Every structure is written in C-alpha cells, then in structure tokens.
Figure 1: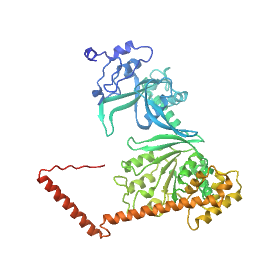
Figure 2: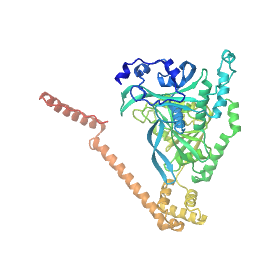
Figure 3: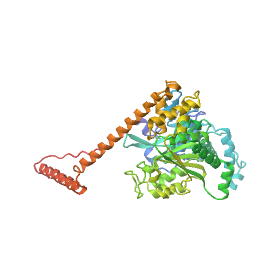
Figure 4: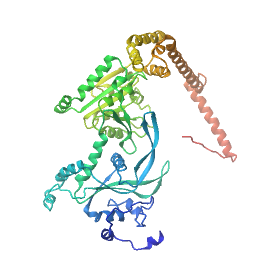
Length: 534
C-alpha cells in the first residue's frame, strides 16, 4: 500500500498504550511479513537480526518486548508444537497437506493441518505450571530470587504465545519457491526459561509416550536432522509371527531380561551403556520385519527406521540419528549387507557414509536409555567381522525357510478352528510337493491369501497345495530368464565374448569415430547438441 508506506510508522510505545484487551488479527502476507492492517515491517532487515521478531501486533499483544522471554524452536520440536496447537480451539491459521491414515478397511488419504502464520496464545497444562515452578526456582539467581516475588513464583498469566512467521523474500529451490519460516515461543515476564522449557518437555513426553496397542513409526529426516514421525501403527500380537518355538522363546527371554529393572541397574552400576543390539539374518520373506513390529507392540516401544543408503547420509548425520533417538525406542537398520563390500568400499554410488562411521555410530548409540538396535541382513556371511563383534551385535537371530512346525502353525493361524491333525497333514502335503526345494513364510502366506474363501479341508488338500508349486516354479523360471538376459547383455557390451581389453579397444575406436564425425560436423558449420539425462 503506497499511501501506508509514506505515513509515519508508529513506535512500540504507541501499540503498548493502545493495545486491545483481546489478541488482534495477526494474519500476515507471505512476502513482506506485513499484517492485514498495513503495518509495514522490513523483512530484509529481519533476515539478519539481533532480536527474535519485529512485528507491531506482537508488541501490541505483549507490551514491552523487554519484559518477555523468547525461545526459537525448529526441527522436531517445532513439529510437535504445531501438532499440539492445531488441535486447540485458539488456533486460527493453518497450512494443509495430504497424509495417509489407517482405517478398519486399510488406509485412506486425508487433509492434515499444521500451524499457519500468526500469533496464538496457548494455555499451559497444569503439569507445565508445576514443572515450571521447579525449573524457574533453579534457573533464577539468588539476586533475582530475592528481588520482589519469591523464588519460583509465576505470574497469573500462565499462557505461552506461539509465533510463526516468515522472513525474507522467496527463494527458488529445485522444486518451487520457498520462504524462510521460523517459530518462536514467548512467555510474558522476565526469566521464564523454566516455563518455556517445561512446556517443551511436556510435548516431548507426550510424543515419546507409547500405548500397549499402538506404536509410532519415525524416519530420520536427513535434511533437517530430526526424527520425523510418519504414522501411528496398530501393534500386532507376537503370536501372529510364526517362528520356530525355540527361536521365538530364546529371543523373548533375552529381551525380557534386558528390559527388566534389575538389568538396567546392573548396567548403571558397572558403567556400561544400557543398550542391546540384534542381527536378524536369513532368507528374504522369513518374517524379520514382522517380528520387529511385533516386538515394538509387546514392549511398548516406538520404531525408528534409518536409511543409511541415502545420498546425503554422512557419518555425522548417522551419529546424530542414534544420539537423538528417543529412549526406549527400537532403531532399525535394514539390509546392512547392501552397504559395504568385502574391502569396506561403499556399494551405493554417491553415498558419503563410511564403514568407520557406521561402527562409530553403533559404538556410541544414543544416551544409553535402554535403546534396542536391530540390523537385518539376508547374507550374514557378507558382513565384515568388525561389524559382528560383541558390543556391536549382542545376539544373532536366524530366519530360515519354513519348517514343518511353522507350516502347521501358520495353517492354524488362518484356520483357528481346525485341529492339529489337519494342520500337520497340510504341512506334509507341502513337503511332498516341494521335494528338495525350500519355501519362505511369505510364499505360504500368499497361498493362504489366495485360499481365503476356501475351507480348511480344501486348503489342506494335496490338489490345492500344488498351486504353491506352480507359483514357485513360475518365479524360478522368471528368475533364470532374467539372469540369462543379463548375461547376454553383458556379453554384447563386451563385444560378443571378447576379452575386456578388446572390448575397451572397441569402445575407444567407436568413441574416436564419433569424435571424428563430430569434428567434421563442426568444421562444416554443423551444430552440436548435448543432451544430459539425469
């Protein structure tokens, strides 16, 4: 507004004297950080500033900024505050995005709100008041405690203000334009660090809280360096994962012993980091991922998934992921055999993670608050012995092809009213049809999905079981076909079976011919166009 820009700009004292009894409308534009009331602010100056904000309506609501306490929040904590405030009736500005949510019939997509631009006055829970009194009594110096109010007193206004604003001008990114966004917590009164900290600790405690029937799945956000909560999943029963009885019993006994109070005290008394590492190894489709989720439900722990093959995953980022994981969580590193080769070289192109960085992260995992680390691998024999030494891997759990015991147990999972005799008959029919071949549990589960409309007797019959063998043979034939095609393509690239040296010479000759043609085209006035496909 040109006319408004030419008018004299009111100072903070004017707004403090004329502030209304209720919080004013603080909706802002996206570019100039300007309220609807046309009270201008210099966004470029705020991009390099020595104060947390410069917004007249904030001053109008709080009075003298020098009489308040401020805290800038970012990353995971800013996300927790946003999720908390949007569910309060005082929230009036929102951003929307699309997210998936679980339902009885599967999942559906829905609009998920987050906190938008503006200033929101948030009432503090009673627990925050109590924690703030204790924290502020510790934070205040003896001089502050003796000047006026008693140590630890909190004013009648127990609210906290949440300000979300944008600074600077739009900046182009690889996807779209972006504006720097920031969130600030404000408490009225000086020396209110304890109140702000107690409020944040309360939200962290709520986020880390687990329930017997659900758990939270988080993934490490490499760009912003925090654990991003993706979804809350329904926990499955440990009995729904069919493993050999001896394997399951041994694992559960080991975890039960680790999470006991006596074990935690023993680790503390001996100065040993309170953590436990497992290696789940074996054939694909044997139930490794299913068991991890079942353990999370049984022991009320949240899952933290790491993707160490990400092109931006550095040694420091991996270490931060371990350190910042919530206590009593399960950190999962899947397919660790796909990371490094026999000479400890990185198998993934453009991934800066080093083998020593992985070892250092495992050695210094987390704050030692009962963290469980689970690594999965299809080929334990391909792992470096340094990764498998005690302390980095405390227990190895083997996952093999389906045994006779597992086949019968899985049959009873899908047909609970059937008797053990029919289940064993099904297992015998599968063994006879397979012969010397092996089948993973995922293959058996697929069979029961295809037989979901059949009776137990029909599913256990020898005629129905033959469909497993047909599917198995079809996949083996496709696998061999793909391998043969790959070998033929490799031979063609090497010059129809020629030696590597001859193949290199052939490629060099071809490149020379292309260069000669290109030079000829340029000399004759032709135009070269290079197209790079990423």
